Image (cartoon, rainbow over all chains, first blue to last red; front, side, top):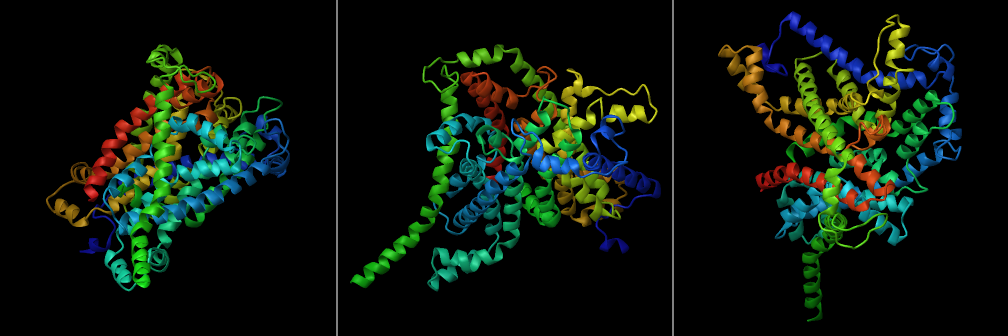
Length: 292
Length: 297
């Protein structure tokens, strides 16, 4: 009866267990390897990379590659470093995440608590939009952004990310609110509470877990986006595009240490978010994607 | 009377309010998703070059597209990439999930290590692997320095093998995420079923093959849908890792569409390749979403 309290009822022998631990550790090394390589080589002088060993610890520790990646490295034609692009990304991500999450919350509320004829169709059409290959909208989007005078600007990128983000945020909030007892909403209605009041006073206070998921999902996707940034960024390119320009530049010596420092800079915000709130993210992502 | 009509107006407003609030999202979706899809489909039947033009050319772009060697390369590459990527990610994800589910000490440490690549941009992943696989400074160089003089690993510079480096980097990025999906599925299985089978004398192997894996069907389906979607969209990773090269050896539909539309000024052909990408994804997604939404009712 000892097995009752255990995670799984399957029991394994000693040899099998050693094998299992070995495989798990090997894969942990596999996943950590690129991070180790990036980290260790971003604090080495360039000569130690080209002449030395990529896996070895630095003989001379230096933060110069980080300083260069941040403020002086050649991005495209300008020696500006990644700093201005990092700011572009922040200016783009914060409003885009906030708007798409709020709109998604309202949509989810309506699609579960104020149902109407054809609401499944409305939701289905919005849901499918999450899964289109964005190549299909690139050309008309370029035309429309040009007509609106938003091409190559941060507001243009915010618009694009909100438009193609609300499908996912609506999905998350809809699935979450579906489990909330509708009787409570009806009771509040009988007491005279209106549409926004019910949302504000009853649903929003319990939306914490799913709001975390929506914000992290949107933040990661928008921060990491490359296709829209490269197509519509113009002079307001986000971090990913700048990093790619830095790494692919064909002029001069390839400064691998600066590239690695730049790559870590581009990864830091999402890694930070993931480390702080990753647990909720995975839990919610499972609820959202496995259940549909 | 005035009071009652004001009340009347308020209730009418309350009835309409939800639809009014939802309307902008729906309108935006109709315009920016479905309107744009129709526009791109329309463009694929026109002689658009650098800018959209409205001269109808019928199926000419599609005929040209399928006659292009670069498109053939892209199709072959996406077939190799997608099948290997989906199969390997699923296999590694399932294996790691089953192993982690054996009351492993340190599971709390291992899980985030497996998962963190998912938080990175494909551009970051591509940069890391690009230099790690570079024969001049990366793995080959390291092995030779460690004394294995004849060690050779030049896949990333080899037109026949470069596509497999993309598979490697993509598997590195997503297999941990697939693991999490399977782990969630495993944790949802009722232990009583497993115990009953054990009492009936089933071995561990039989237990997993006959009972657990069939019960994970929904997780397999979700993994397949998400991975195939990621595979067809793959653009950033190719750009960062190989830039479509060496030569055009790692061209994919996504990179093909971009270069024909925006750098080669063949917008009609670019649009027709985008339409084919959409049709491929729709063939996978529509039945899946339809089944999911019907079930929910």
